Image (cartoon, rainbow, N blue to C red; front, side, top):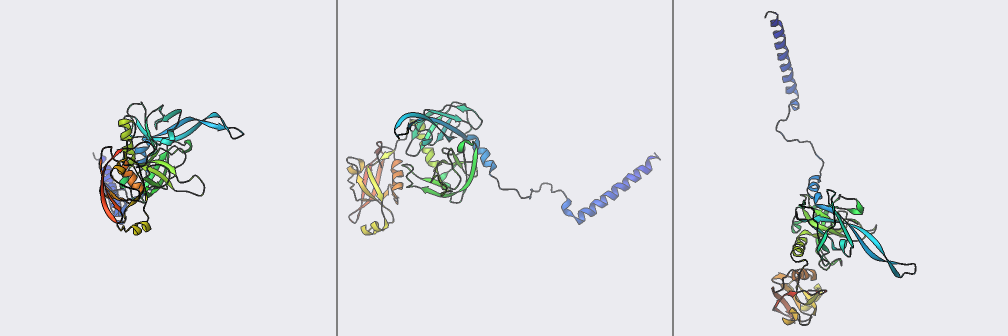
Amino acid sequence: MARLKPVLVFLLQSIVVGLAAAFIAVLLRPQLLPSVGQPDLAPRPASYADAVAISAPAVANVYTRRLVLARGDDGAADRYRTNTSLGSAVVFDADGYLVTNYHVVANATEIRVQMADGRIASPTVVGVDAETDLAVLKVDLGELTAIPLGRSDQLRIGDVVLAIGNPYGLSKTVTQGIVSATGRGLLGLNTFENFIQTDAAINEGNSGGALINTLGELVGINTAVLAQDSGTEGISFAIPVNLVRGVVDEIKRQGRVIRGWVGLEPDELTRAEANALGIDTGAGIILTKVIDNGPAAQAGLLPGDVILSINGEPIRSRQQALLIVAALEPGNRVELDAWRNGQRFSATLTAAERPPDETP
């Protein structure tokens, strides 16, 4: 015991000296204390990796083959050749339904889909809608990871968006940009145009891929660029998910999209024309043609009439009227507020199913 006493004294002295030194060090430099339970204040680089991780597993590659006429040396189309092309698709629900662009699969003799996990399948074409450039495919690969659906009507100009697809065969490519505009129409790309414009790069093979927000939610289907030349950059278009959702639901239910029709052909009403007609509402489209025996003709509408509202909604463009009428179900009652010869009048008609190749 006597031998241990000097050792214990030495240890106690060492502990006391060490604690005193530590106390002085912390007193002079308190940042040396560990920040238990405090957030990490170190700056981190901005990243959208979490959004991509959520949505990328639902983006597939599409490979197609089709026969096209080839021209000989004399310019005559005298033989067929096989053409291959690339595209993308998005898993819309866990049952194996995918959505892509109609132009990706149009006239294809063979379609192959490669999922994000590498599995390959030959899908069934459930239905297409050329007027919105959408197609619905079905694969039998068991339960799939579907992409979360966002709200395109909540997009704001300046919101960050990401495009995911298969450009030039480079699968799982992600590009980033912002929403440049919404509600773009009159581009001559589709019959029904209500595009999201973005500067996220969309190249060959991106068509049919996903445009997502920073939460990883689908807000659009990438479909087109303004021009494929070196003089135009940063102008790409996507079909808004709110429109896609309705088209996909109808194709799944009945194999096609049934649209309303009232039998009229409208045109834009310029400010000068509105002033000349005495219209000061700031709304209106002018009828250039009324189809014989169609719903509009039966309701007494005439060429030259100005439609001010449809079912209470002020009409400010031809495209707006087209979308409203197309969304009607056959048999729906339609109330029109119109203008003729300096006076307002009302008309009531019943929407019919739109015949092929007809306008509203």
